[in-house]
Image (cartoon, rainbow, N blue to C red; front, side, top):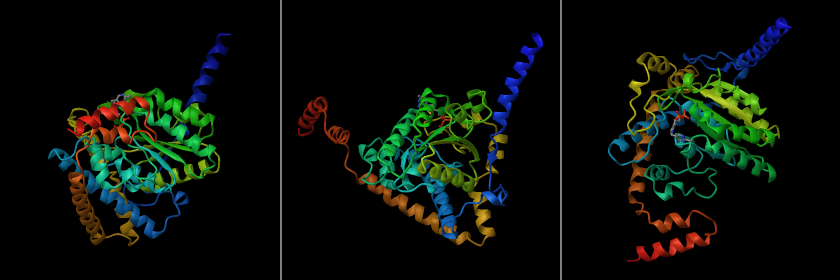
Length: 371
Ligand SMILES: Cc1ncc(C[n+]2csc(CCOP(=O)(O)OP(=O)(O)O)c2C)c(N)n1
């Protein structure tokens, strides 16, 4: 009897380990920009490859300028993005305009490339209602600050798309810390149960503010959390834009073909602080770890890959840098020129039809504002 129990325990462990071991990291181009997985190469034209690089360079400049603008007091909340460009931009690049993005606070770049004007991104950072007043036809909502909460909303949006017979997907992002939230599990489970066309992306940048992922969970990968929800999960090198693109593109194809949701973990790193509110990364990250991830820089590796193909050079890079700087200058001026917000503005964009209790408040503020 005793030996049977022993064997049974051993079997459980073995079965579990087999599942964990299946989550290998998908990589297509390595740190040197060399293709290591030819068979997984996405079908992208030269122009598309260049466009992806352009967006990554542009976004790195936007990050640098946003940090300066924040320090000058010209922006409010800002969560730095350098290091996460492949994870953020290649995932958005794999989507179509009709797909719906439910972002977290660090996902402003995806919003911009999905159609949000830069001036509105700046206004969102300032807490101005116009920042959350998403233009008609741009399929996204303002970023969620409550970590993991947008996973639930995404399951709902995806189910709504399915019920309306749309050929589109709902996509959301959270960080490694977000995967410890109850909302994360509820969202992926619900989407799995209802076979909803959702893509759940976990940008594992190794830290939830100062908490390392090793203290966040006993799980070896975050992708394996998909198993409990009965949906496919994949871990990709989040510093490799092509690996991210392929994983999201294939998840999208499966979703619109009625094959349900996917969980994608991108292994990435944020080079800057958590936000500009004052955390000091040197207190929770070693310079050795920073150096290790600097070598994986998505811009450096993609630049090498494109240069080897004769698709990128210094002139092209400088053109993008100048364009980004110019756009930012114009957009921050537009944000500055936007009239100060009134309480009535905020109330009037909240609902399609204003509920009676808000109508009362609206009238009170309208009266005050007219004085
Ligand atoms: C439900 C909830 N709990 C706590 C917080 C405070 N908080 C803000 S960001 C953050 C860390 C999030 O880390 P992660 O999910 O890894 O995302 P990252 O910031 O690294 O992109 C925490 C705990 C929050 N916003 N929401």
